[in-house]
Image 1 (tube, rainbow, N blue to C red):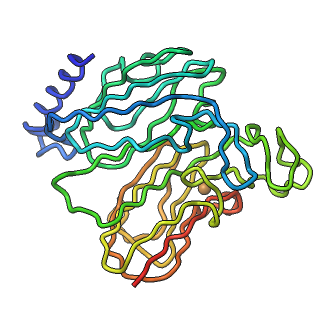
Image 2: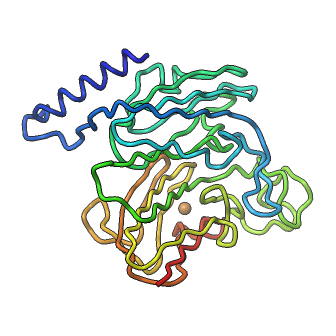
Image 3: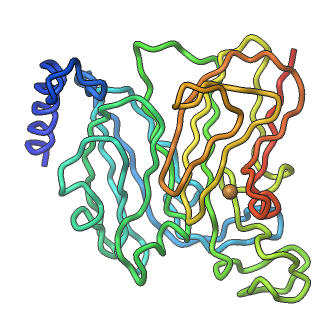
Length: 302
Ligand SMILES: [Cu+2]
């Protein structure tokens, strides 16, 4: 497995150090040079109860009993080793975006942990940025793992880039209404959108960092003058936007924006210099998703 990754890295470095394969300049996607460092993570897949808000109990399948799963953090050029243990009754995996890996660590056709099994996944953090990771094993259904809670973020720092004073990691995810065991003021489930006192089709379904609504989504904080880095990944079945009140940043298209579109499995990283004190909303701008809990608060002090 290591040999296969080494070959991948060597090939990519050859193309990176030489001209662009099209012959028109340096490759803008050049991978980072190896640091020689290895970071190791243990991920355990289990089924557990998770409160997205008090009384809103979700029967989750997740990594290390938390939604989202733990942050996988590295510097560009590091190798990442993940030991994945599956304590559920269906096949599970961890599939990552952007990092280099051999097919044996893909987590789709290969790199699957069977029930009771521990496997090793080997990655190379080729590029700085913020990327999703998630289950990609076909259990009872192909997307069941992601809906149940098997998702998280890979944060790859650029050791040569500007350091941020504050880093805010945002994981947007849609939950499966059929997996709720309880909702506030409701008897135990399972629930359908039209059940009992349950109003609206989306309540508690759209989460930020595993929680719903401004009262329960963990707050972000910064102060005026800070270089604030936002790392946003979108995992789930819906298209979301990421909108922050009172602020603006340079979008990927080079145009100033305060709201970006992220489809399933998409991600973005951007910085701003904080200049606006206050208590600001950040949220998905799809009305049903806001109503469904996808909103939080960002507090800026003087
Ligand atoms: Cu949305």
